[in-house]
Length: 180
Image (tube, rainbow, N blue to C red; front, side):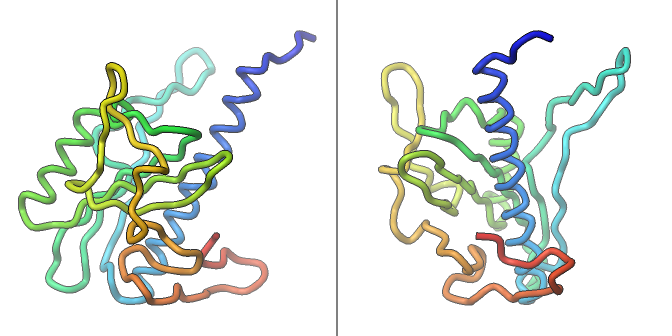
């Protein structure tokens, strides 16, 4: 048996952290539906193909989440990223950025949800047009030091309805929201 490399272990760790962050975002949106903030939300997964016994993920065509607000039917678009260190702007695909831009242009609400892991941690909900991209060397990125206090999502708080505690649903055998 071949020993596993450090990079494959890092990949598994990153994948597990990303899945946990997506579960948190799913919980945020379920709580927002219970609070009456959202009428509907979809977690947009990439398409999957089976090739030679392997699963191949197609590129996403839009944002991670899309939805509709309960009050008036405004659109919601959300891109969610979990990272160690800085988040590179290039990690947001052109089609995703275009969707976020269009949702804002037509009066909807577009967000970048970022989880910073590592030495300094935090989850932030940043209005799309307010993301403070900084050019360092040749690429744009953001880090936890660029975040504003009002973007920080406190444990147990709904990012779409600040200051309101998330509802707790289910029992010990089912999912419980929120996940902190």
